[in-house]
Length: 381
Image (cartoon, rainbow, N blue to C red; front, side, top):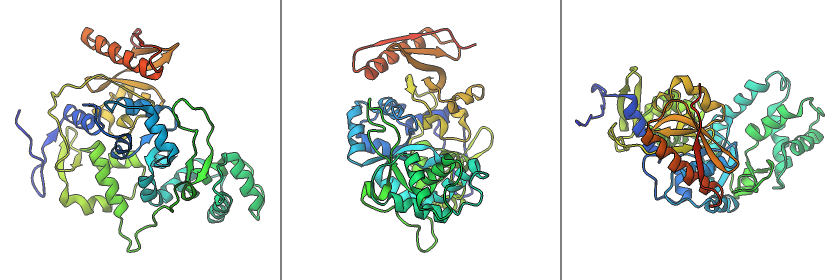
């Protein structure tokens, strides 16, 4: 197969079809070949894992790492080297402490606007700067608090008294105005616990990095590079869909000379790192089980490289999906210790066997070896 040379400068950009983009995405997402990486390095490479469902990142890492030990991730959380916090798209993500501290300030305006997009009417007339100051003052003691506890304490401090509707106030505080981490046991392997928020600087012993004093955007440039390393080749709209930040055109422009250019079959310009892996489209792709809200599916504006448009809604509905030949082909759940797979289309006999085999491995992982059962049900209508 003739290798397509990426374009630089004014050269004509070669076209990558959906299958080529699929294989590149799988390689970047550590889903083509299991990676021999420490857990911390895997979380860093992926730019975090979506984690509003506390146990789902464990499945995501199990599917990506050759010998994943879930207690290693729990240890990173209790050691404060990995953090659960609101960041990309205002959703809860699991990120390295270093990335959270480096990136958090760059997300401040987006987080605030996203909360206002949901609760603008309820928060009308609230002085957000005053609210932020009150929230930080309450959280300065480093004690973990539920959102309700934080709202009650902030209300007691605010000159205006109580604002009706505690949830909008709480969402604005914990998801936007006050950088917080979700303290363990939330997110630990097999642990149950509600969300208790602790001031990020207290939890990590450092304040998030301030914006660059010269008005430059080193964090934006870092996010572009990191996104392409874990997701590319991609368009600017894909980058925006992953992180939720609209203000990255300047960062993309600043990096353009060091990037290479492709086009997809619809004519969109795709940017990429020159030395990042772009496997041949006919590279075999093993069966992979993905957790709910996995960024391998959600991390693009154009998700056609990994999921058909007819099934796009599954990715935002919290359905766990199965990749067959690199594409979303089924959903899965655990029922009475059995991994139950429901195909979205007919599966070839060889694919059915591979799905059951991988499902049995997953069942064993989820049950600590007590169950190795998997089955395939009737395809969805």
